[in-house]
Amino acid sequence: MKKGIVLLGPDKHIEAKAANLKLPVTVSDKPQLPYAKTLIVAPGTGIPWDLLSAGWHFLERWAAAVPLWRYGQTAESVGTAAERKRTKAVIRDLRVLLHSHELLFVRANEEGQALVDAWNEEMAGGGEKRLAFLRAYYRVKPRCCVLPISWLAEVQQRSAQDARTAKPVKRAGPLVSVEIAPGRFVRCHPGDEETVRAQYGPQGRRRGG
Image (cartoon, rainbow, N blue to C red; front, side, top):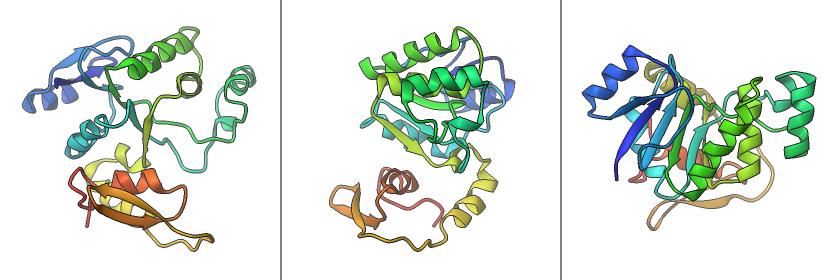
């Protein structure tokens, strides 16, 4: 299955690195899906090249994979009042986290294409891009793997960031089991399932430890 990058504007560093990895690059002014598995990336983004294989693997199960933008900052704190009102009409509640659309893995299937089409429609009028992506996400409701914010950090910073976010937090309630590899499970708190899956590679090995 062919994999490639759609670069939303020129970036010589990304293009050179992709060439070294023999990954085709399409430079475009808007998101599109020219490959079976596409990484849509904004110029200047610090791509976690060492995690690309995991990103492609997620697309075997999900139509898209995208990191969260910032923990603790929600849709109610960005954009204009008019944009927030428009967004609330779609998603009903602005107290939701935003996504880092600068690093978006998408599979070229019906769900993936619908997400990209809706995103382009929402961005057509300009404005806050994160709210536009959020509206598209809620309109389409694709099967999406939400990744931790550390996917946008530079490689040398990510291990330290993961170590900080990995500190134990006391929570009430029973644990749930998450399958990270065939026949292999990890227990976590409800709501942390996708974060746990993202911390383990396709073979069920924990990253960074």
